[in-house]
Amino acid sequence: MGFSSQNDYDNFIRILDEKVKNQKMKINSSLEEANSILGINYYTYVTCCNCGENWFLEMPDHSKRGYFLNKQGVGIYYAKKDEHDRKVKRNGLIILTIILIISIYKCI
Image 1 (cartoon, rainbow, N blue to C red):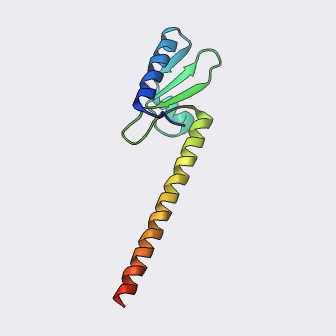
Image 2 (image 1 turned 45 degrees about the vertical axis):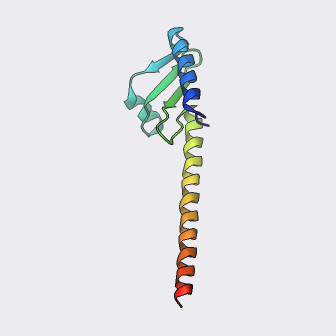
Image 3 (image 1 turned 180 degrees about the horizontal axis):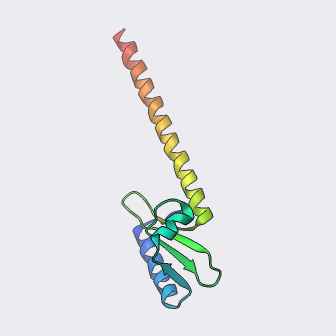
C-alpha cells in the first residue's frame, strides 16, 4: 500500500507536481483541516480538482514507506499496521517465554 522504494516516491512526486501545475490537484496548506478529517497528523493532503476527493500523503521516513491514499485507504493502512504490530509483540513474548522456560529447565 505504501511506496515500494525512494525511487518510486520520487517518481510519484514528479507526477503529483505536474498535476498541481496543470491544476488537476490542489495541495492544501491547512494541516489542521487534514488532521480534523482523519484525526491523525499528516505532512500533506491534496484535493482532486475534478472530483473533490481528499488524498493524504505521508512521506517515506527510514523504515516507514509512506503512502498516498484516500481517507478509506488510510483507515485500512493503519488497521493493517496495528494488526502487524500486535503480531510482532505477541510473537516476541512467545519467544521470550520459550527462552525463559528453557533457561529455567536447564538450571533444574
